[in-house]
Image (cartoon, rainbow, N blue to C red; front, side, top):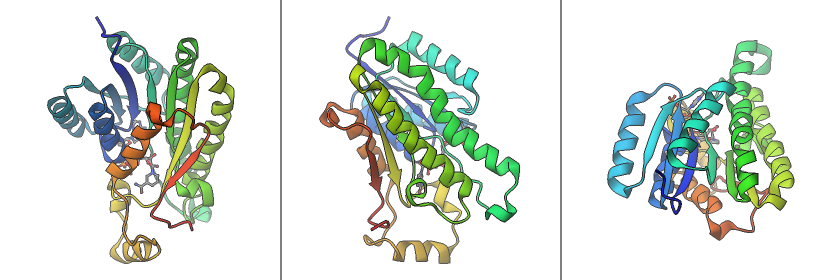
Amino acid sequence: MTDSTRRVALVTGGSRGIGRATVRALARDGFDVAFCYRSDDQSARSLEKEARGEFGSEVEGTCVDVADAASVRAWIETTEERFGPVDAAVTAAGITRDNPLVLMDDEQWRQVVDTNLDGVYHVCRAVVFGMMKRRRGAIVNLSSVAGVYGHGTQTNYSASKAGIIGFSRALAKETGRAGIRVNAVAPGFIETDMVAAMNDKARKDAVNSIPLRRMGTAEEVADLIAYLVSERAAYITGAVLQIDGGITI
Ligand code: NAP
């Protein structure tokens, strides 16, 4: 039996980084949250435990590869049976496989596009009809400044993140009259495992090129996402909000 006053959120890539901080922010704001991840069971279990304990919301992680359409559909169906209809969807699952294009192999291209771009399509395709029927829903897709400006050694990643911007704007146009809002968030350098692989020199150079002279935190991005899915952002749709410490000025 579900409580119809509860709001339900889906978060992909919820076990670590920006997705994890988003699960916590949405649980804090009163959502029951279903999140998915690819392999890190330990992080998923620890997040369930800490978020339930701190915020009293239902928080459940499931191992689902967002690149696999059938698995995503099955996950969302089970979530809606268990928690009720999805009010908010946040697509944070993402990977990098960096290489200059002259050295890139097909597998590096495919993995990034399949996870980052197809993953967003699979989730949005599975939730949008229900949202349109209920005339309510908010979607936030994680893009990147690399998707707006391009980033060397990341043609695959930049293309997938630029695709997310086009996808989100088109979907915002299609579904606005049904009361659905779709926005993209484009972070710069954020302190997560994704940037932990940078060597000291690359990190120093990156920080020196950021006007605010530091990388952002996952919590800062999660707060922007929590705002975008809330009623406070009721007139924002089709936006691409950069959160980058000014690196793109
Ligand atoms: P992260 O720390 O590397 O975490 C990635 C998350 O995505 C993990 O929970 C991972 O699950 C999950 N994931 C990866 N592949 C998946 C798949 N095929 N199916 C389901 N889940 C999958 O990444 P992050 O830095 O938080 O990045 C989150 C999003 O923000 C990404 O879309 C990224 O492109 C974007 N972004 C990040 C930055 C940055 O500086 N960090 C900047 C711009 C944009 P497992 O734990 O199981 O592997």
